[in-house]
Image 1 (tube, rainbow, N blue to C red):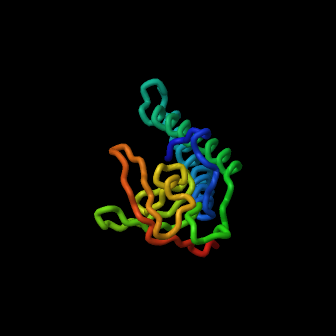
Image 2 (image 1 turned 60 degrees about the horizontal axis):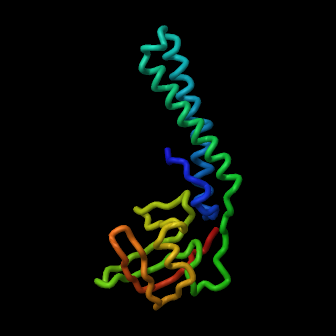
Image 3 (image 1 turned 45 degrees about the vertical axis):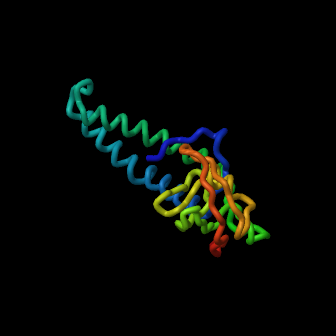
Length: 167
């Protein structure tokens, strides 16, 4: 389960794919996981003394975590703004863009700017709220970008900006 986020620090934008993932997680937790854990807790409770019953205690903790995540997802899905089309000016970096970058050593990077609920470093998805994404916004191919990072600043050149056809 992912942690809940502080609403004040995060944007409400999400891609259609990201919204689908959150909806699928909500459905899985509600229709599959919660009933499984509820059943396990009921079986553990039937064994007798609950104060020293590890399965019961663990199951109750799991239920609290699932319920917390369900509340978060339900509320978050209501407040999200789905960005389901590319911007009018596709030469600039905006939400949903795939951005190619080259650093000062010639290393190439590929990032997609997505909502805070769907960032995934393994896929190259960075949150629109991240320092990198904030530095990239409104930039065009060929522009230099300076990004403040924990270890100092890095500079990159934007090598490409593209938008996938959003379905």
